Image (cartoon, rainbow, N blue to C red; front, top):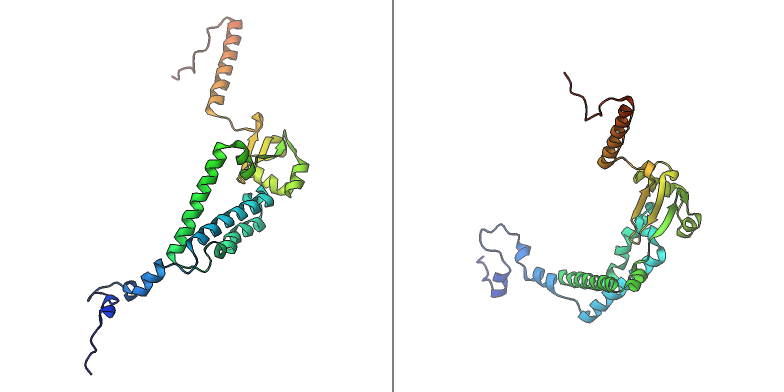
Amino acid sequence: MPALPLTAPALLTLPPTGSDVPGWLWSGDFWSNLFSLDTTPLVEKVVRTVLVYALILVVVRLAGKRTLAQWNSFDLVVVLLLSNVVQNAVIGPDTSFLGGAIGAVVLVAFNSAMDRLGFLNARTERLLEGTATTLVHDGRYDEATLRRLGLRRHELARALHLQGADRIDQVEVARLEPGGTFTVRLKAEAQSATVEDLRRAVADLQAHLDARLDALGAPPVDGAPDRP
C-alpha cells in the first residue's frame, strides 16, 4: 500500500530524520499547552496572587512566631501543607508554565514592595513582621509569654541546648525573632573562651608572676624560659 503524502502541518510536528529528540518535543500541542493561558484574565491572576499573599500574611501573624519556628512536627506539617492548600487560589485552573511564571513574578514583586515599605516606615515594619519576644531573661523563664505563645518548657530547653546552654541559669536572654529564628545570649561565665580571653588571662598571669618576683627581688619574667 503506497504511503500517504504528508501535509504541511504534519511535517511541522515530525522530528528531523535521524534525530534523537523525542517526537513530543516537536509537537505543536506541547508548546501550545506550555505557553497558552486559560480563559482567566491576566488581571484576575494578579489580584488572586496579591490576595493570597495578604491572606497568608494575616494567617501567619495570627498563628504566631512559633509556627514559623517549627518547634514540633505539627508546626512543620502546617508549613508544608500551606502552600499546597492555596496553590489553586493563586493560579486557578491554569496549569501552564506561563500561568505559573506570572504568579511567581507577581508574588516576588509584591513581596519586594512590602519589604521596601517596611524599610521606609518602622511602624509598618512592626505591623507586618512583629517584634522580637523575650522568652528567658537572667536565667528565668517568662512564664506568661510561654503560655501566650503555647510553648512548653521542654521545647524551649531543647532549643536552648542547641544554642549551647546546658542549663536555664546559663542564659542571660533568649528571644524568638519575628521570622521564627531563635537567638540566645549566654552569661559571661557560660560562654566559651575566645583567643582574646586567653591572651588577657596570660597577661594577667604574667603580671601576677612579675609582682611576686618583684617582691622577692628577682628579675621579671619575660616569656617562657628557654629549654636546653
